[in-house]
Length: 187
Image 1 (spheres, rainbow, N blue to C red):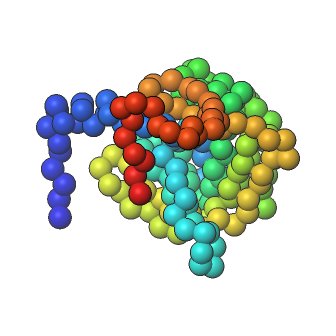
Image 2 (cartoon, rainbow, N blue to C red):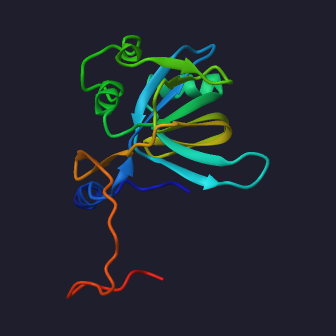
Image 3 (cartoon, rainbow, N blue to C red):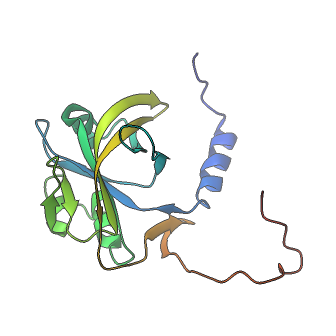
């Protein structure tokens, strides 16, 4: 089944609409025979906590050298950044002009058991083995078996990206009655 390219107006509407979807900011890293690479990723999600290993997925641009290296290395780390780590995200997104090799200089790193680099102080990090990869459009959907989890002892707030800007999560207490004009939450 071949996928047709959406019309320019539909693509533009989709991109504009997705900019309103808040997501956690992660830096996905890999190290192995294909080298040490990393890139900023906002498309990361839990798939399942059950099975031999919990699984998660990341979506990576097929044009990225980091994607090729990650697939060749077969292992990766998802570093979930905290609210004060936007500079790490910007660096691995290529916004600072740092070369791929120099990007790791922006933070301190420790190896996880699989050898993949983890930021010393992320909010959480997941070391994964590649289970499968499928290209859909311009991106690979990569499923990873979680081998190890790091959770920071110091609590923090995740760095999020929405409305084309960084932000943080703010907790609130729901009121007893919804404000006038508010709809009921989905069931």
